[in-house]
Image (cartoon, rainbow, N blue to C red; front, top):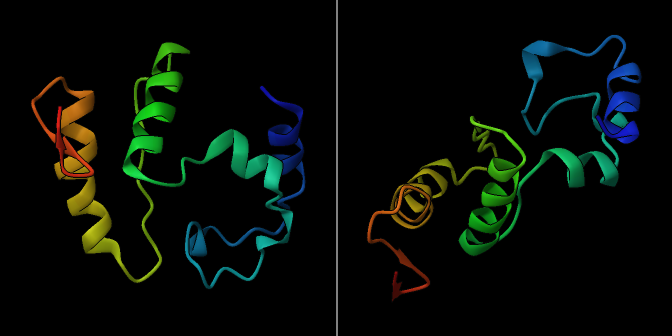
Length: 99
């Protein structure tokens, strides 16, 4: 477990779990760039595919999506069209290019 992540756990005393993953969380200060780098997947569909393949190779078998930016339907649709088919080995598209 990366030290940045264990520090993240230690630093979240009084965390409001009812606001977990929501943009209006009043306790985001303990989320450092290192925590984001070690526990989040951000960026383009191609970046998500790359990151998810890497964490799968490390033994991770499940991944949750927490879309909370006002564009949730588009994020889920993009995953369904461009990320999941590629990871599942189904002929899908990414950036308009057939895979």
